[in-house]
Amino acid sequence: MDDKEKYDDTDFREVVSEEETDIEKSDVEKTSVEETKDTQKKEENEYEDICYICRRPESRAGKMIKIPNDICICADCMQKTFDSMNHPGFPMGDFSNMSGMPNISLVNLSDLQNMNNVPKSQRLKKKKPKEEKKAAPVLDIKSIPAPHKIKASLDEYVVGQEKAKKVMSVAVYNHYKRIACDHLDGIEIEKSNMLMIGPTGSGKTYMVRTLAKLLDVPLAIADATSLTEAGYIGDDIESVVSKLLAAADNDVERAEHGIIFIDEIDKIAKKKNTNQRDVSGESVQQGMLKLLEGAEIEVPVGANSKNAMVPMVTVNTKDILFICGGAFPDLEEIIKERLNKHSSMGFQADLKDKYDKEENLLHQVAVEDIRKYGMIPEFLGRLPVVFALDSLSEDMLVRILEEPKNAIIKQYKKLLEMDEVKLEFEPEALRAIARKAKKKDVGARALRAIIEEFMLDIMYEIPKDDNIGMVTITEDYIENKGGPLISMRGCAEIGERAIGSAGI
Image (cartoon, helix red, strand yellow):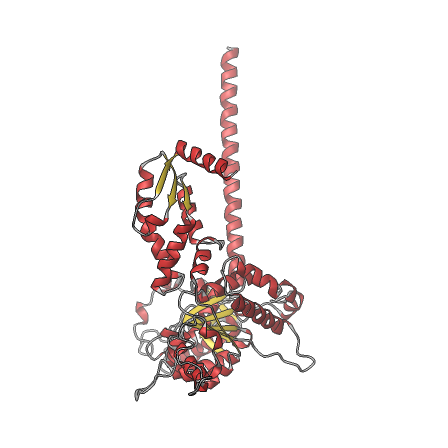
């Protein structure tokens, strides 16, 4: 009898403990739901309300009137609604005759629920009050690294291009000092927009990406080939600013301190010997003048076209750094023509082929050469910092293969490490890869294509055999004269020891 009472007591305790755990779980679930609701409310408070009718944000339309179903209407649209209701054609008293508003009976008010849910990509972040701005400025000059630190960080990712990295570091540092300084003494520092000229595959886009990552500022990369005058066929000129706004998470203040990189800028040069309207050449240059100089521009939020039914916002480009880059093919011929003007007949005359074999002829570029290429002088005047990148030599290509933090060789070594296989490259093999890439004449982009070609069979065959411990890429394998050296796990260890003893 006592044993039975004990069993009943234990059963009762188990039931009570289970109920307590269920209550605890429900409390945890409630707190988690409340926390998520709080975070959602905080996120909602960060963004501006948008009028359901005219799609203008709160900063432009004024304070919103909130009605059920989370619908916000600005005062202007509400007044227009009242005015239309007071119109003689609108039946205020007699609802039997609905001639003033056709098909009103077909409107279902329940369909209006969640109609004002605008995606975050089309919503603006609220601007901070002036008091908060003074307490915490958007950009602190002390947080910006010095030029030598910027260059040291670029050295970790970009091989060579010493002059280009130095010029970019100083120009960027001066630009952000210009933003941080006050103009109380009447001295206003001008913008230091940049124009970088370099052959394809020399690392123009890569340098700008690395720079934006280092400074932690929003970056927009646009292609000049898609830009046309007033969005004639392609994108509008001002769409590059809307891309920067999207990169800044629709924060206007943050976007106004960002970087815009316009690639393929040489493609908007003036078209020669044409009688047609130049909507993608000189017209684009003319339209970009106000962007480069600094102007208040209305751009759509969450779209590239102004015709889209999205809210508009005003962005000031005065403090946005513009970097333009292009390969400028055949610019060397214009430089040679200018340099060979001094050649004359006689014993001390310069030879016409004097500059034919010079690889880095772009370093002698002058503004008049770029103007002759097809860029208008007003456009060039707004890009005061002009510099050229080195063409990649065979030695530089070898260094690109193994030195940077994100080097191609390191990427493939990491891929094979996941299969517990060691990958090694002989120095002669790296030299052979660089030779092949140099012949293709497309810069560092050729390296990846070459390595992908001969690594295909290795990446396919290695997962078949778990005994493979190391793969060594040889020069003969690159030149299609032999195969790679494959060592099994036990042999790989012996080979490493033998090499070590031989080195000693």
